[in-house]
Amino acid sequence: MSLNARSGVAFEETLSRVKTADAGDDARAALATLFASVTPDSDFVDQARAARALKRLHVGSLGLRPLRVALVAGSTLDHFAPVLRFWLARMGFDAEVALSPFDTAVQSVLDPSSALRRSRPDIVWLFSTYRDLGLDVRPGSTVEQVQEQVGAAVESRCVLWRQLTEHLGCTVIDNLVDVPAEDPFGNLSGSAPWGLRAMLRRYNVDLAAAAPSAVALFDLDHVASLWGRRRWEDARYWFHSKHAFALDATGNVAHAAARLIAGARGLAKKCLVLDLDNTLWGGVIGDDGLAGIELGHGEAGEAFVALHRFVKALKDRGVILAVCSKNDPDMAASVFREHPDSVLRFDDFAVFVANWRNKADNIREIAAALNIGLDSLVFMDDNPMERDIVRRHLPEVEVIDLPEDPSGYVAALARPRWFETVAFSAEDRERGRYYADNAQRTAFREDFVDLASYLRGLDMEGAMGGADSFHQPRMAQLINKSNQFHLTGTRYSEAELSALAASPDCFVRHMRLADRFGDSGLIACVVLRRRDRAMHIDTWVMSCRVLGRTVEEFIANDMRAIALAQGCDRLVGRYVRSGKNGLVADLYERLGFTSGNDGEWTFALDPARPGWTSWVRPAQEKGQTR
Image (tube, rainbow, N blue to C red):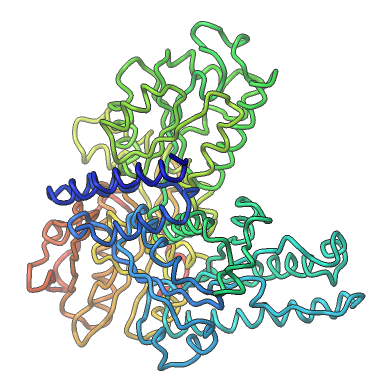
């Protein structure tokens, strides 16, 4: 039996198990089995089979987030859409993926009556390739002539972006285009300014510089290079049916795109939990001592330093780091404090747990200390037994499988793309510190016998502000990424927030918080809409790391003040249950609102009645007042 035949038999057996689980009303087990059946590198036949199997499953009860994605392309993507839906399900989405008619990108975007404009998708992916740009200059052309063509190509994309963000308010994805493997000018194509490869590289750089925050750029060229440029294009399929890339590359493209979309919609992972011995260095610190572990010297030592650098870069771009190790805590910490070749230092970790307890239990405590869900964690450990224990007891945690050779650790951590993001802000750079400060607050809490004394001791100061240009990117990021403290599940782009803030009947607010342990940054966002004499709370999102500190009451007082100033006699809020926002189900009830129909809660405003009690004191208001 051939290898492909054996693979086909194995896949059929997997599909049989999936059907059995689904028939037994265990959709979660069926989905997990299906997800385990393919990888991004699986061939197109298996990708298509898995996508068809997903379509037959009853996944409505699993709390997958609905998502509408529109693909607009000058190439054939009919085969790609179902596979993209499969990988989006792996990221937590119940996606509807629609295709605009072939090669009608400009018409679909610009025509107000087009199916694309009428459908109002959450995400529009302008799937462009190098063939769509039409770059063509004569050999020997000047740099100015080259830049004129590249600039025109970039501007043509900007026109489409503006139309989509202004009229649909959606997230737009466009491609950094692929660079072809073959060119008649050979090496000169990349070294001469007028060469096609050089022009495409210039286009990608200029496109990235022109992209506003509402536009996410998918690095198609990087995916092509990872796949292999000579295999990336299959000329037979291009000439026959306008497939822009090889069919067997479909899984890699869909997987990378689904990770990017997850990052844009708030479902990227937040925290990397690391083992120590034989994971961040070679050897056992308790047996080998500081001088005896492999770190910085020799082949293995250099590989561990490379891992340190990669992990440090993750931390610097906003990923929270934590340690979960079976070790003596002082001995384990000494590596990060004293070893000269350790790139990671002790302060890089928001939580440091080293003891001899079960790792699954320790990971639960890490999540609790950080106040994030277990499904926000990624666990990395060289020991297969420890990985298996975590998988069995904490299925929500993603576990990285490591090879025996530490030189492969960086690749093993990078390939799943669990921490994909579409933007980077100053808040992201400080995220690890925010969570480390929060862990100190938790420890500080243990010194008090009552909550009021603890909150008083925190010495909290809150500042409310509007949708000014400095805070607006972070406000949009918080709205689109927040899932737990999000009362309605609304999503707004920066452009939409600007439009709302400019409306006389809308009020877009943010809150910053600081206390004795540090500045927590921008931690909440509110969108209010005035209708007659009622102020409606359209959107209320908040970082979960500040829960239980009377921040909610502080924000409610700000909403109350705005409503009274606008002559309103009531505040009206809504709660729309999702799979993740159960922790705020009783928020309005706790604040004294009265329940109504369709999830609405109303609070009657009386100027003579005092507001809510909060241990947060007001700071000077920052930013615009609207």
